[in-house]
Image (cartoon, one colour):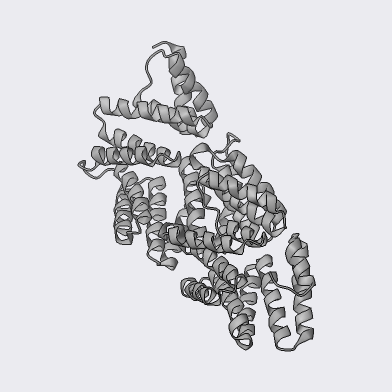
Length: 479
């Protein structure tokens, strides 16, 4: 082999080892187009990683397919199994579930009969996600335990961290919240400490933030989105494919905290940055932007945002139902929520169902369906447990129902809801509760208290730019 060829191969290996992905892609792509010799299976795996990191998704998948074939030709079932696992994840992200399932089956074919090896932990990791999607908690927990054993034996920091994330997923699906979040803390600490590869760090942040949102843990979501965005900003190659995914999670946090201008701008940026195999993140960002626009009275813009989310495969509820309510189409709002609640399953986590139930309570009250509102609020109360965000949501719904059915019982519940939202620093929901408290005070004949709560609500809405709510509060109404 000539010296220049050796030099190019050595430079490519060094770039891969130090995660200089743009450089690695340039070197490996050039060698692949003008080969002095064919790329090895390991080099094709590296080309796939470098192409994905550099935004060349089609080339990444093509290189991984060739890597799998090369591993098979060499009789390397471990390498072939690992390639099959990554192809499963890639095709699943591209919205091709049948092809993804085929590659997962192929991974099992390569690895199941082998003695314990690190590559089997990748299959177990996928098995956790698959079992969770089927709402099979025991199977998810068994797969997570298997992954943990394999990861610990491997000595790989990446696999150990992913094993903790898998364990957290299984525990959270079983309702073992404290244990699951503690495991997730351990995994995120390893990422934040720089102990993991860039690929694992990015995947872990994305998965951890998803689990955090599903579990309605606002405190962790605030902290981890900040940490993850800082990591995205410091990667060597500048363009980080995980940036858009993390930014989409950040939008949800900014929305809750009332930083709506920043949330909408971040949503636009996230939709531009999200890679094609993670379009569910872009859909989530469109939904969050629609929520901001709807609450500010920009209904046409909100409709467009929800339509974009729907095009990307996400049912934009409860935002779309609340938009229909704002448009005076309460029956359409109620029908949409009934469908969303019927379609929702355990994969979406308690927070997603809680939001649907809260909206169902609001819409049912708006249509005079008090019994339906009470039923939705009661289910939400059971679901919320002692999770602060969900408890505040449940108390708000319960207080709104009580205001209609037992006005004298409403103020204590609403005060508890307001305290919850203030502790969480969620200003929009706090202002909404103040409008309910104003109505309760007015019903009790305490007009001074009603004016005070209404003024506080109006000012809170005005600061956020929630014009319709501010106008309703100013004239003494509730929305």
